[in-house]
Image (cartoon, rainbow, N blue to C red; front, side, top):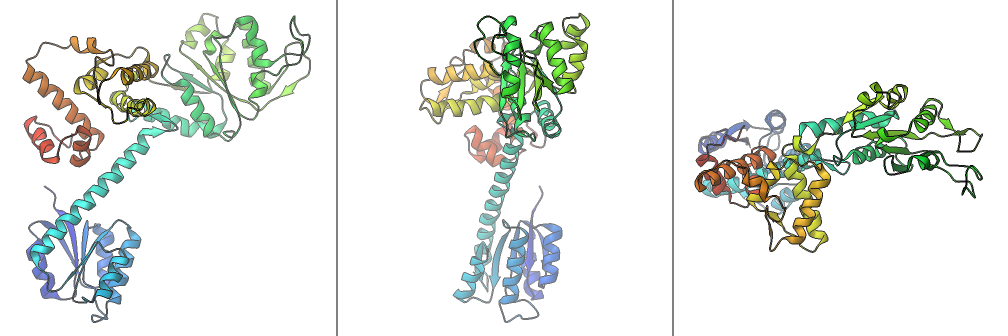
Length: 452
């Protein structure tokens, strides 16, 4: 097991040697005798804790040299843990040291038992802070522009959005229904140069074919029966922003021609009009169909396809996103729980198992609906597989003894928690609702490798 790194800054060689001998069994000890060597050692080794004597050369009878070193260490790492151990025991020096960022202050001669306890507590606090920073980093990585995803597939989508958004190029988003294609489009819009402009979404499959052209391009007064006044279309409404065309594969041939012309020339005519109207609208399209097959069969124009597919991204199905399923389910549970006045809800083990086993044909939209329904139906704080209406997913499991089933579920839950928290026992135990010693026992009993 790797020892915790400890830096001892002390100008008295005998005291340095004694402290190294006393603490070497439990810590990886480094030594320094003045400010210069201490700063070099701290920068090179990043010790978890530094024991600092205030009286350092060239002014060993003055605390200022040690206090300056303390300030330099805290400036380089605001979360550094420094315990001042000094003969400069006046209350004023202690207050100055703590005010400058010291974790604690001990006077010489030091009681080694007391120092050992202070060190243990200090290391524990440092580990908690490190785990918290790691969790914050993971949380930032999992959440991107209102989307959640720790899986490699979703991280690739996030990287695509970051790179493509500033370009202003047309984007084609592929994916099954319910995977969140519009959320990806909105993320591209928000991160683009025209992110301050409007975002206008239209579902090409939800509007009758004979109305789709006028909805997109607008119309002039008298253009057709019932056109009693001029009306702007969605392209004009999205000027200076983004037009999102969902289910682009349902676009009628006549409208495909007119959209192609707009993408080529960046201007258009309203229905019944002759005036060319310029627009700097960015177009993002999405479909759950195979546009290449539709192009080959003649149902979708090849030239329009290539205009739309300058940049292409595929949003993965939920069933292929691994741990994202539970990650998103917990996020929805917290959100909907608060919405319905049921804060503090948790998933039972059978619910977590069912969430992972279900195939999610409706993708994220289905997951949202199932969790929302479960929140309403749940009694008490635990949401079960039955509440999620996923009990059937568990019935497909192979026959096991009760002990085997329990150990299998425990092993999977512990592995998942450790993986999410990068092997950190404290945070994994908190998520699982057990103590640190209990989790250590489970890891050993179930034969789980923390590093894997």
